[in-house]
Image (cartoon, rainbow, N blue to C red; front, side, top):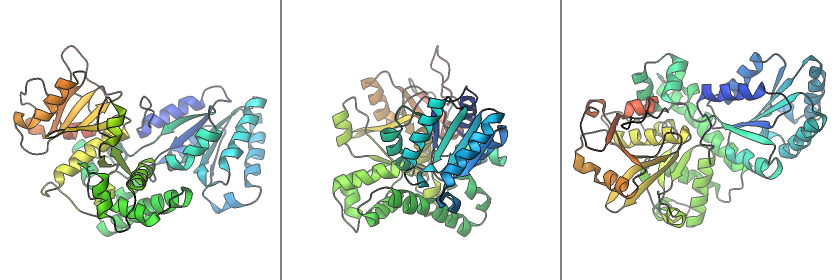
Amino acid sequence: MLEKALPHSRQAVKAELMRRLQEPPPGRIQVLTGPRQVGKTTLLLELARQLPNAVYHAVDTPEAALPGWWEGIWRDVRLRQNRGPVQVFLDEIQYLAKWDRLVKAKIDEIVRQQAPVHLVLSGSSALLVGRGLTETLAGRFEHLRLLHWSARDLATAFDLSDQSAVEILVREGSYPGAFPLRQQPDRWRAYIRDSIIEPAIGRDVLVLHPVRKPALLRQLFMIVLGHPAEIISLQKLVGQLHDRGALETVAHYLSILEQAYLVAALPKYSPRVVRRRAAPPKIVVLNNALMAAMQTVDESHPRWGAWVENACLAHAWNQGQEVAYWREEPLEVDAVLTGTWGRWAVEVKTGDFAPRDLVGLLEFCRRYPDFRPLVLCPQERVQDEIPGVHLMAWADFLWGRPLPDTPGEEGTEH
């Protein structure tokens, strides 16, 4: 589960981490996790350059496997302490054998001696570091997540207009390393497959997490890429797999894909947890690039609406909101959001629609009046008057503009 009150955009995470590193040492370990290829290493290197007495080490290098590597780091740190507080950045910590025990022993020593040292760890997946944090380092760390880039992040990094950044986010996703290859589709797709998908599944998940049926996991991932923003039963997913597995296995593998920041299986909204768990999940691919590596879609494609909806739900998830859906046949709501943005019931419309098409949204808000109805629609429909319903351009939502005002209230920043 994400820490919903914490920042997740690149600049916000960097600022928060810098603030914590300027507190009096020693403090708790700062742990930065997130998907592959979203700039965690770049962020740590930027911080290391800005701080006068910092050291950076990548753990996923051949040198890290040499005898004495770990001990050598701390000999250097002890020498640096004569110059003032030291910030130690260890990137991709999960590739160090028995890393959790080594880190626990070191941080306990630092605290016991009141050494002027701040320790920052990073990892490419929550599932890789989660067990060590919760079982070995409980109470000794604080967690930040750098998640998939937003349209605003793309615009800032590559000097894009807001409209261009939003269109790219929907059509091609938001991995910054892939951006320079956009005009060479074959190289772009190869980068997504070889630098993101394969390492995330083949290296992170299959090597460092117990998976009894790796072929089943790969098949499941490829299948769910074809069902963005769809509610799909586990039975249907099992029926599409060549290597059949139990429903519990498929549900577990969906959870692993979510911990790897690839795909989220959204629950059905219900105040009753038991009913929430029994309902089929709604699939959200957490970066549209993962789908674009397999298929090209534009505004004229019949699946464009599903890609826009997927991008909107993924944006909310990546910005730290709780995202669910709601369905009581024949009524349905695309997304139910709770978190720092407030409580919203959301419908995503990319084409023409009439008030009668919002009956599910209005019924949900009647049953749960603490939620406000929001329709994400084309820009030309924003000025429509639909009693009791807020309208917002889906492009503005993806850009991160404030959610619509409620009379007497200020807009919700996101």
